[in-house]
Image (cartoon, rainbow, N blue to C red; front, top):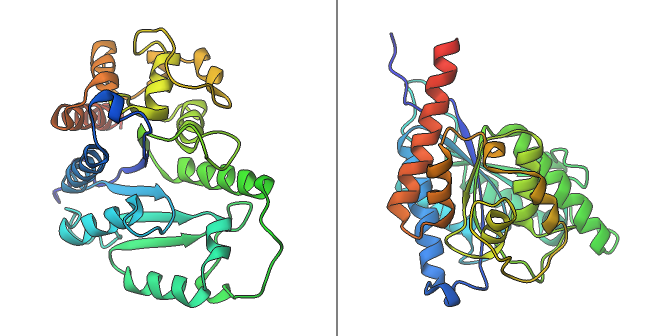
Length: 275
């Protein structure tokens, strides 16, 4: 029988952005980048593919993810030549970049990552169809529609989701990005790994779901109370209640990685046992 890596048939979405309250927690932005790097590296080593919906800012998390894949190739099964990362760009980001730049990036990343350009409803735009024809001004409503559509695509193409950090002010869309990704996953009963120890939106969500003790912390933001209808059992991530409580509060990257992998492997074993 041909050997398979434990997570070779799994695709894991990673949702991460800066946290404004990391300083109050005794953490620096480097801690968040290190957390993403270690989580991504271990998932790749187990054969998983990674999904990310981000932008193309210099020194941003998308760039970090591409660098990681270049250094740590996915440990794929024999004959599995699929790229390690699937990156989706929402319509307002696509329209803000020169088409030649986007096509060049797609060519540059060939073999390492699939780069998907989405229209406002979340449908794929083939690179050859991109042009620089001036379009209408992108409004806040356009941003909200496009980001919601992109996050629905991320949920559809992934098997589980990891969320950490996340700004709760100055965001585009109908709610903070981390919140919408987490809420979409919960509503779809998709396994969710919630790391609240790095602050930000993920920590607020953990408090609303009673994974972390109150009182409520952080500023109010749109749809925050929507998470109160969910609890630890809603995570469906293969971890026990005690393990999820630990994952929600830990600031130790190695502990978080171990718990995420433990949950994913339990889920994979459970599926294999019923096959």
